[in-house]
Image (cartoon, rainbow, N blue to C red):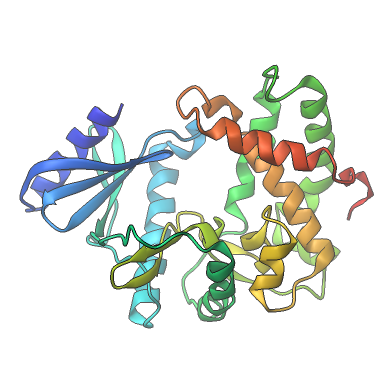
Amino acid sequence: MPDAAVQAAATAARFLGLTVTDPTVLYEAFSTVVHLKPSPVVARVPMNLPSSLQEPKPAVRRQQREIDAMTWLAEQGVPVVQPAHPVPVEQDGLCMTFWKYVDVDQAVEPDYLGATARVADLHTRLASYPGELPWMTPLRLIGPGLTTAEPVPGLLEQEDLERARAEWKVLEPILTSRSGFEAAFPSVAVQPIHGDAPSWNLINTVDGPLWADFEDVCIGPREWDLAGFGPDLCRAYGASLDPEVQQLMDLARVLQVIVCTPLVPQFPDLADGIRMFTAQWRDMPFAAGQG
């Protein structure tokens, strides 16, 4: 599949007037990221995603929200990877986005505590974002994903699935609508958030750190951006967080990870993350006492 992504990205880039002679895959996971050499532009082509995220119209809306948010953040002086084209592009059945190439500083080790400390400022800047955003889009895949999920011995057991479905039955009315969340937590602020673990999406470049991957930008509680990574990162955030909401977000993150299990054949490294999250989750209180 990376060959298809590379070919589509190169073809689309040439239609946009870019010179592309040596397209090179930089990274491959949920998306294939292609440096369109010699042009200083990168294409991100979603490939290994749940089928509902690959339907053309929703995919385009999701990508446009990301481009719009990151364009606005760049205009406010927030250090982000900047779009190289203002709209998503469809080519050979694939919908992709284009970004300015950044030179990653390979000598810098990831510092997730330090990155999390920066998330509080990112939230402050995002709070005034004027664009229209949906409510907690990352959670929309959980219900359908759990309905169709099947056990995978040694990775996701039948009892895990039964617990996950029971927990989601409790969490769904609270977490999948703004009105449901605000009824349960009237004093907890909601606002535009990154949506996808921003402390893991801070790229260390030779010109300094840049925020990236706002594909799940949405409205939600700040706690979602810290979900699943433990109390040390929550303390590093430095601003007040609601402990009950954080617990719910941590549970929701596990369920979000669980529904990615069918992607393991295409993305084998995902199995380690699933094992890590489910091992922690099995020691968590059952969500029937929440809400």
